[in-house]
Length: 613
Image 1 (tube, rainbow, N blue to C red):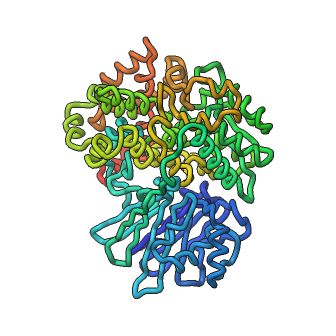
Image 2: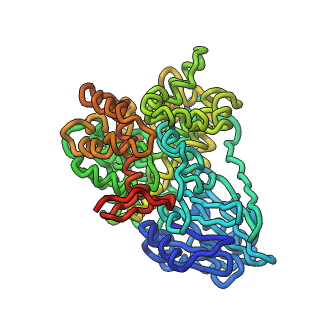
Image 3: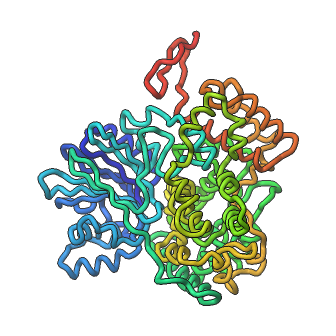
């Protein structure tokens, strides 16, 4: 696991390369190396997980094909044996070391042979001009941020958004519609970021460009299961067998491995399978004091049944304002899920306890149909009722009607012309092939999961030099989940039916029978008058501050505070939290520092009004 960065058909000073490397060194503290030639440069920050003494990047040093790589290749031993048998020399047993030989053997289709999570950049100097190839894994576990300038055909890229801003001239303008897109989908949607000139490479993509040329983009086909999955116990057995195999594969590392155990079905099932391989360590997070949705007792019960060494992490709500600052900085753009705070604190504790790898239960809801919004939409559709408006509101941090009240008249007019969901994506969701649940599942897996969940997990785990591995994102598991019929996922008011059946007998009955609840921060209870979080929100969401950008109506935001103080409500609390996170991001990345008597330079390069001395 590493962080990567570089440029192509461009120039960057050594200082810029050092700055970008430094900005994401937390994700790769074990080594930093670069390779540069006229027109291009590659760099990596290494987090050593496999072959701690090998794995020097860029791979292929001394050859004409060089690669920098972020992620894990779980089938690298199989690939190494195949490539060595075909005459390739691979210098060590690091997983990424197979990449140059794999490319030499299979060309641009080499990523089709990879099983794992990854984002990589490859330079091929064998032709008349250098060629750059970028590739991402099938579902977006490892993001790659890009700034492609079509006018001069230049590219700059990095694993983290704040690091990409270390290259000069990037991120000068925020997308005007970014706030609306954020409130509508809880984070910048799809491959977009908050910045006009920065995008994220789509999952399952190979991007190829020759120096001075125009890129070609190839989407690799999604994996499919081998035919329909039989009903009943056959489906449950198949899921159990597949997930058990993948958890076993993901436990392999040359560093200590931990498990994130929330006490819910998904992470508990991963914990149970991992414990079959030998002793395990589990981590759970809770909050000092008495709060709703406390899952620590469920997590402890799962750990005890698995014979695990259990680590209970507890954080003080008084520390939330400072934690929010760190969390938002590492994400580089707003994410409205309060769980982000917990995720950052939890992985920090995992690293402090001496672990470098952690398995999580993320993505099971997307793969197996676990969200309440999925159930409601499917049931409404089956009854012949309109389902889409309620589903889209459930995705949001502020439903459509509330967003309309929060915006100024000018901003409402702007977002009406630039909707949060691209027209093609919305059309596919509403009118594409398959049942409503089929379409929602595709949308959740291909669009929302990478942007909202996986980038958050990646950035906030690597912020503490921890590699998060996600068994439910493995290709075999995703393919199996997508092959299930609607009734095998959701029926009779029950979600994740096949996954629950697969867990029968493996988990405590109380865990299997408990009502589904979110693994999140109880923000409705915590965002109340008298708490440090409330005071922080009041300061940053003051009407005069909000008026500066002309997007939000200060009186409407004040009404949200009043409603939350008098009648605490999940909707008002989440909207306030989302606005707070957005304002923290703006404070860190956009608000210029003002010195007495000096007109500060705004992010777009213009002088703001001078402040009186």
